[in-house]
Every structure is written in C-alpha cells, then in structure tokens.
Image (cartoon, rainbow, N blue to C red):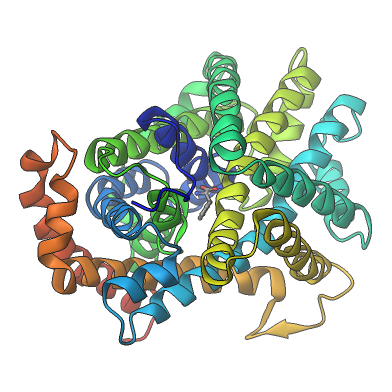
Length: 446
Ligand code: PHE
C-alpha cells in the first residue's frame, strides 16, 4: 500500500462516502420520474432485480480494481493489464466529467428551488403557472448559470478538504441529515388523503408494458444510481485500506442506495396521485408537479424547502465523487497537488456546464444528433458509456484479472466465501450477456 496516498479513516467512513456518491439526484429526482414513465411497480421490480444482481457485482468489481491498485481509473487498468485496457479508464474519466457538467446544472436548480421555496415564488397551486416559472427559470441565460457556479464552488470546497477530512467528513454529516429529512417527507406523503393510489401504482407490478426500452431504462438507472461504469467506485475503492471488506461494504452501499430510491418513490408518487397529477411528467416531475403539491399542503413551504435542501445535499455528495474521479486522475498521473487540480477541474466543469445550461434556452438551436447539448450529454452517458463501462469492467474481472480478482475479494471479507461463486457467475456470464442484449435491443440496433 502506498503510504502517502490518502485513505478513508475506517470501513464505516468508506461506506458513508460511497453511499454519498451513490445516493444523489439519481435516486430522488431521476428514479421516481423514470419509474412514473415506465409504468410503476413492474419497473421497480426489474430495477431492484438488476441492482442486486448485476449492479452489486459490478460495484464489487470496481472496488477490487481500485483497492488492488490504489490508483486512478486509467492508472489502475495500466497497472493491471496494459494493452488497450487503460482506454476503459480514460473513457470512464471523460464520462465522469461529462456527467458532472450537466449534473451541476440540475443541482444548481435544487439550490435555486430551495431559496424559491422559502420566498414562496414557486408555490402557487396552479401547476401550469409553476411549469411556466420552471421553464422561464431554466431557459434564463443568467440565473441558473449563477446557481450552477455556486454549486460547483461548494463541490470544489468539499474536495479541497481531501479524502478523509473533506469527502468523508461531509458524508458523515450530510448522509444522516438526508435520511431524517427523507423519513419526514415519506410520512407526510403517504398519509395524504388519496395517497393509496400512488402507493399501489408504485408497488403493484403490471408487466404488460415492459419493453426492451424499459429494461435499458432500468439498467442505465441502476448504473447511474450506483455510480458505476465511470470510475467513481474505482477511485473510491483506491482510497480503501488494504484489508477493508469489499463485499460487505458493497452490499451495504447497494442496500442504502436502493432504500433511498424506494423511499423517494414513496415521497413523490403518492403525492402525485393524491393531487391528481400525472406520474409521466418526466424530468419536470420534481420541479413542477411537486411544488404545486406542496402549495396545496398546510406548511407546504416548509416541506418544499426541506425537500429541495434534501435534493441539494444528495447532489453535493455525488458531485464530489464525480469531481474526485478527475482529481484522482490528474493527481496520480501528474503528481500535481490537490488544490491546483481541484480548482482547475472546477473551472473546466463550469466551462462545459455553461453551454449545457444555455442549451435549454438561448442555445437550443444548436443540436447534436437532434438533441440539445444537455439532453445529448444525458443520453450519451446514461444509455451508452455507463452500460459500456460496466460491461468492460465485468469482462475485465471475469476473464482477464480472474485469479487476482478473486483473491482480492477474499482478502478481508468474511462474506466473500459465501458470495464468490454467485459473483463469478454474474460477472463472467450473466452481466456481459444481459448488458449487451439490453444495450443492443434498447438502442434499437436490431
Ligand atoms: N449516483 C449518483 C446519483 O444517483 C450520480 C453519480 C454517478 C455520482 C456517477 C457519482 C458518479 O445521483
């Protein structure tokens, strides 16, 4: 183990930091609306099935690569295999950077909505009016850009503290806070009059609407939510202590991530049904439907403020992980210090975030493959590079780093002997075949 490399202070510290990375906008903002668009209960079941088979196995694989090499994703593949494999690392780092740029834009909206909830400007009962306010806000050339800058500033601030006293400390404070707020909101939502219909929509599966597109949506969501396929868990794994338990920690992180997704579904979907809104509203579900619901509740401004605060916290610990992928790469490869790298990476992120934000408004005439930059970045990462990254990691552990991988997994883990057989089967056969089939069919290649 490289003694000068930064490490988490304990196994618990790692679990919290990794859960902080996993739990984010993906769980609270994206998961409920993707579930709403994909028919509810059946999607939930498919999603959980993927998360607890392919998801947790690829998570274990990424942690193995990180802990074994104690390097950034590109350096890790170079150290283990050479050849073309480091390209997987480079693709991961680029993907992390691309995701970060639009992630910070949405995270900026959550900061804005936190403030707008306090001042009450978004809380009118008429959802058409709220929709108009939302679109006026996100297409404005200046306001969302300022909030994006503020959010990137917060992210860089946490990163400057380093692995233990920045990232881990933030997660230790913010993750429990997030849980408390989430539980308060679940209780509020499921006790609303008429919540039952939303709960049924969310929990009762109807498989008649399931298509390849549904499977791709569930797969992409699983990778995005668990922070897989783009080097974040390789990077966080590289800060693990030599004998930290990989399998147990991976399982804990997966359970926490799935739990927050399910709880978020229980906040949003019952409220949507209770107030007669449509669950298929898409990305606007959180920013349009919810405020109109909060506006109709007693003390709605308080719940709205709490909710957007929750979203901002969740986004912050995730953005920190995305930025850390880039930071670890430049620190490991060039030996530059954290401060210089973190600030430059923040500036570079902002430089791409600005056009991403403007692409929703003044720059919407400029499209890539028929999509504005913001949507193109989301599509390219979630539907292509994340599943591809996950596929390559699975192939790497299943077929290239076979023996060493299993030894690494057994080292320090009491759970490993019980899991290793199933893990091997998934990582070698099930995950590659399933990911490939879903990618090819979901993208409509055949
Ligand atoms: N997992 C985060 C979320 O659900 C997003 C993310 C992806 C964070 C990749 C880090 C790395 O919002």
